[in-house]
Image (cartoon, rainbow, N blue to C red):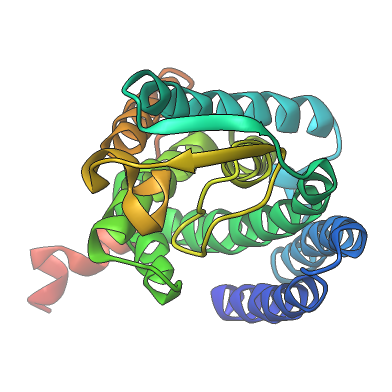
Length: 278
């Protein structure tokens, strides 16, 4: 029931904030305000439902160090996507023709903030965290990563390869970031930094949702395997490679810090042969 109540609460929040952000997406300044307000609401709803169902404060959204942790995550996300673009640019598959829309980039700050926070609350704060309690870190990482990737099949220019790429470079990587840090701030920062770099800075397609008019006026061309095609650079083998490497780094940190969880004794006992034979 704890899982049910938390999942219902965050999904209602997800629907409300998603609808609000979509309603104002054509107004850059409203997108900024509504997106940031939606991000704050997502955190408040998550903290509230955890407190009500678990009778404790949610430690993964503690205010102490939140700004610094989110900032580090943003640097990682921007750096990771910047590395993808650097490879495409060097290979001649990405061109910059000057500035496009600085105001549009401002609007995308709010849009991407609202989306990143809501998705991290749903997928890492609730799904990964509670599944991990019963199955352990690695199984929870795979299960929630696959679900996260499959959810992107609903996007306009989605492909099966794009969903697989998102599962690896984002679903697995962001769950590993949560396991390594045991807070939502770093995954939120990485998620936002990645998305904002893709849309707000480099003006590329994000997860098959079409091109964005961000800070730079750009054009992408070349083999779909390298550029991601209509799905965007998130479908590039460069993105998958960098995401996989970062997943390994975060899992190494999680192991070093003793943050890798195994299956609970209760779950293991239920599935044991001795139990099944009774």
